[in-house]
Image 1 (tube, helix red, strand yellow):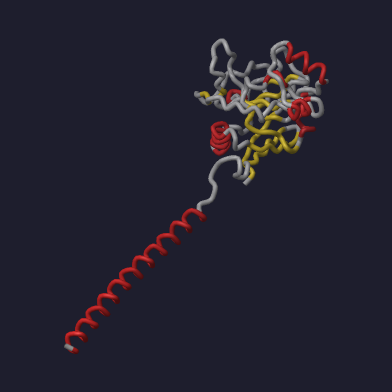
Image 2 (cartoon, rainbow, N blue to C red; image 1 turned 180 degrees about the vertical axis):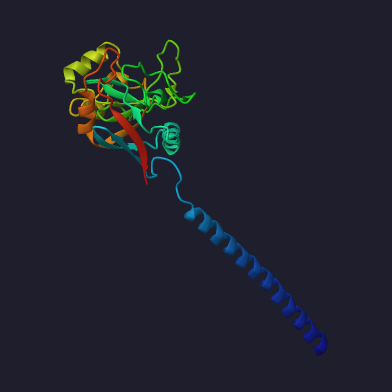
Length: 248
């Protein structure tokens, strides 16, 4: 009887060891899996979105240098410009259209090495971009915006694949903004209205052209280019040459 009891006790002990061992294995496996998942989810860096660092670009012109940032909120336009810059697309081009108190425009590949007086503004990379309108990204002074064809032939307001303009604009009074709103311009938030009554811009372009960046250094250079004497096609008499590069 005692022998049977001993055998039974040994069997129970062995069964206990086996069960607890299996449980411990399960706990260990669960712990390791949990740690692995935690490690994966905490180590993946943010690759895109408004929290990622904004890409800076340098616009070196024959009249000085400007630095601009590309908005993460407009990833299609941002990535397209980065691609074109890396390919050297914007090397040695001209600001081919300049209108004082409005904007300066570039991005036509035909402008590189163009003859004096040659009419420009029709060139591009052979594709257009889907509009990326954002009510918080407006045409304040220094805004980097995409040029495009008019609504009659471009009802979707798709952007040129390469042509862009930098806003100079002007300062508006509250009364002028209210009058523009009465005439059909969308109502402005108090923050946006404050921009147009202090640093200025071109409020009537909001919601019609994609703003995808802004000049953060060199607004004086912008003013100097915008003051250039131009011909009947708004091309500067003296060429304003520029090259765009990425700031790493």
